[in-house]
Image (cartoon, rainbow, N blue to C red; front, side, top):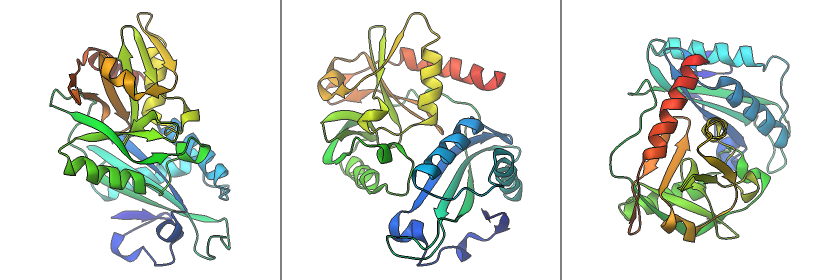
Amino acid sequence: MINFNGTIQDSKSILSSNNRGFAYGDALFETIKTSYGKILFWEDHYFRLMASMRILRMEIPMHFNMEFLESEIKNTLAANGLTDASARVKLTVFRNEGGLYLPDTNDNSFIIDVKPLNSDFYLVSEDHYEVDLFKDYYISPSLLSTLKTNNKVLNVVGSIYAKENNLHNCLTLNTNKNVVEALNGNVFVVKGNVIKTAPLSDGCLKGIMRKQLIEIITEIPEYELIEESISAFELQKADEIFISNAIVGIQPVSKYRKKTFTSTVSKLLIQKLNVKIRLS
């Protein structure tokens, strides 16, 4: 069951051929983890969504406040029997039907879809995880690239490429040939006591987990966090590479081409991340 504009209903009766998210990618989404009814980092997700709606010139209804959407997410979890479990929530907002490239309205609708997750806490996987660069297409270093919109064709094609080449993920490049992010999250590169991640100006997603990790790292005196462009050459020299997103938390990379990596920093950060969640 999904939540469509506050009504719990079957998912099969929603999509119209005139849906602007389907027809033009005129939609935004938030992927959120919940644990036993608690919405993790909800305030950050909400404010990112509101900022993104303003950038796309969507009308934000007066009732579209944090409390309203939180209530609708919890209603959807309850309708699917996921209040006492961990779940993946996808909150999609799309401009209402009408018009071609130029919409007839800036009003919008929302859909909330939920699915169960196996893990209640963030864990660091010890499994082999190999990545390489995806160089068929490039990300534009612009503000739109930092938004979580339905325009994810590069990520889809890159995911197919990864599967065809027996990779677990790929790292994407922008038009300046800098490493921007992974197909499903932000990238952090560790060398010595320096932890580097790409700046938003390079076109990386304004990730919620990226934000949490930056806050955690800046409070650890042994490490220095730098938001700076990452060259592909740096990957070969790194001690550790990890990927972050709101569902997995931290995914260590074990191999990039012929280079293998440790996961020491990943393990440290995942512990601090779980403590942050318990205290929030």
